[in-house]
Image 1 (cartoon, rainbow, N blue to C red):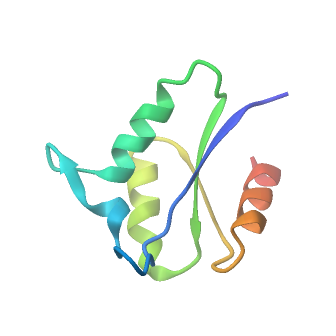
Image 2 (tube, rainbow, N blue to C red; image 1 turned 120 degrees about the vertical axis):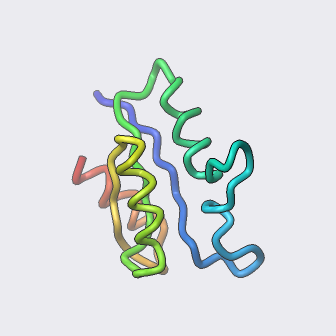
Length: 90
């Protein structure tokens, strides 16, 4: 059995839009820090950034690809469906 870390992220937050893209330390976006932390896991075989199919989340995909992790783009409304489809794909 494989073990994966799913990082669920989207740009459309209503309380703080784009929070995953905000540089928080050394001009590195929050998402990149989270990915780098997940890469330290000795238990995870895969890291998958799960985001939506919306154009506004293209930057999230770019960051994930830059960090050399998998990306799954899926449902805008149903996070559980997004997770399920990501796991099935990878």
